[in-house]
Image (cartoon, rainbow, N blue to C red; front, side, top):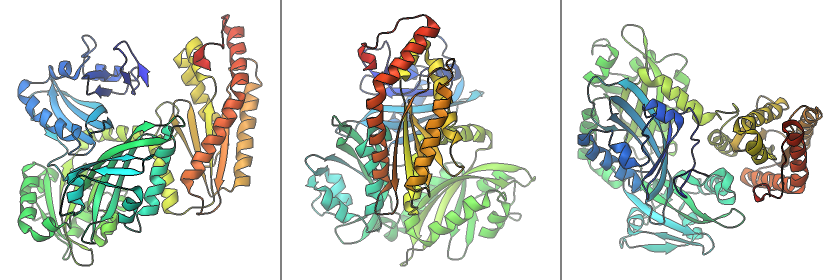
Length: 567
């Protein structure tokens, strides 16, 4: 975590990036804006150092609505994420927010986000949000050394206890409540962030949990690592538990609730649809039709009409997933997707589609879904850029840690074996940054990525996990083949370093393999990382000496490796 002149408060974002990023330390109200954010918001001078100073640029009559939206996320009642649209000076701004740290009481401590600006305002729009309503939420805290999970009274109520008071259970008792199909996969997903900090501190999951009456209900679990021991293993966690299933008693037994939901959605101003999955009849609201330029006669009320309007390249990612969601609650009770839909004039509109299951039959098949469609054609370019930032590392072009973690989950879900992992870490980057500048360090990271990628197959996944760390997934690759790939990589770096004019590019490597499903991929990742750390510590001094000699020879400076920064 970096530091600047604002005391001892650290920040996680890169301040000199052109991406419009921001970070907020809530207890001190300290705000950090990247260079890209300052340019987007036209804040080249008099940059606000606090959120209060930032809010001074927002019209006062908009602030109460913004505060209400923020409070839902900061308290944890509405989950960890939020998108807001609001006027800022003479601009219209869309701000995304993600809570990345909470205190022991579940209150947000730190949030990060990104801005997009649509242009100069000709009028003042109302404050809007991508969320509506506050789901039932309980809070929990887990001590791994003590093997205790403390739940508040709301958690107890959500789990069906008649006496809804705070309670303490063990991790074993928690696992016994999980649906048999959930337990093993969840343990694998959690092991990575629990074992090593490089996999992040956040946990998010959708789970089926057994209630006190024996039935299973769907919950969203959000958590974060609060403390780690000297080896980087998590010791304290905290988070929230939200009931999200649409088949809870209130949803099953009250048709009035569904009617109110429709009224609330319709009031949002987007296109409304209401799908009877038993007959495939669909109600499309007048707003839905007018956004696309159709009349009710041109767009008949059935599912096939909608399917025929979807762009051929998008059908495969829209129709099958929604059909699966209808057939079984195991795929969830809500969805969100973007796709192209044909307008009446033959052009294509980019649509943000959201849907919610309101009823299922005794077999779990959805009988009714309602939802919204929003024309996002004007903002699709920004959305595509954001998705690209999430999937790929902006500096090296490799995959991001987010994409990598999803690939790990995919491999486990499909029980792919054998699979091998190569963990890599660049030696001496701090030395190069200090004496040659961060731009030279960035060039070193880019060159390392190019050399690593040279030995890989198209099916392999290589990601920059952050800083100077890279991890490679080799699906379908046994240990012997992985060792050959690692040898080729090492040879590539040796060839590079044999050129006296080339800046030394020295990496530590670790390799591990899982030959069958008895070996979890999470453990393989940890073993590869530990092997890499052993290699790094064994060669750290020699690597620093080589880099020191090269810098002194080419830059006419003197370097002391006794500096504690290079220990």
